[in-house]
Length: 152
Image (cartoon, rainbow, N blue to C red; front, side, top):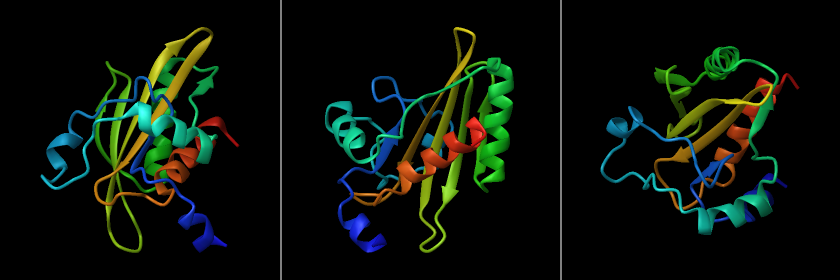
């Protein structure tokens, strides 16, 4: 069944909980090789596919201050074994790298926390450095980050 699901994955190499304004990368840019997938987020192409195949990839609204949510995001990323590359508390941005188990591919992750009425909103973006498709790995990673942050 897993093979069947991976064959049905869309030809995209990144997802974001906010396709219109995905979290940006700052420090990670220097870590990406010249042959890495582009970081540009083509919302016109990606958003419909993401909505169809990965409807759970949505922003997370928390009843926590941005500072509390930022700390929780940092703990979640570290707890998942991601390498935190940079933290930008003034921007509410955390950049990390996840290395895949089987092939050692590096995928880049950005978590952005912003103030929201009565709390904060968390956006997560995950980008594969190589390959036309990530066979759902980025959406699964984003879903796990959101799940852990929401306390489920």
